[in-house]
Image (tube, rainbow, N blue to C red; front, side, top):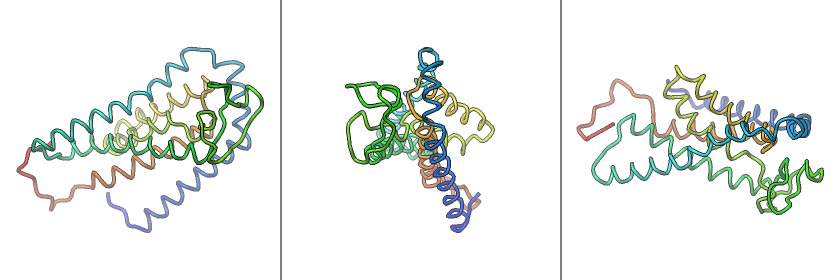
Length: 224
């Protein structure tokens, strides 16, 4: 279903405001409490770490899809709707990951835990805040890359297979649970990553997979 520009703009504005509100509330009232509770009761459980591994798959899968699609197109293949959906998923994933890397540098947020080179952290030494453009692995918590990487392809699937939306949302939810349980990320990092990945996924889908209309003519090229 196509929507007009005013409706698209209003929805985009509403999504942006909801993200800002949820992230702000989390930073102000929830992040430190959730991290402290997770560190005390949950983060040593290996099951939470396993859940975060779900988000390790989208990037290499996306790279393989795009490489294969590029070779196939060079050989004469012209993607149909299914092919465009696969390509959209790959593009959305890689674009979202590239964007989150730039945002991590721009926001310069410290981590809940100390992971590398004695990085400052909330659990380690009570550090909680943002140092924009600081750089370095110790200032790269916001937004969550794991959540971004899983939300982008799930947004594509959300659009293409609406009957299974509970599953696509559940995949993002499992990664979020893993990140919180392992105390890998602040709650607000996860919220921001989910919004970022979903925004990129929905945007790429709209560009790559426009709604089919009765006037669309079938191609005589090989399509999928």
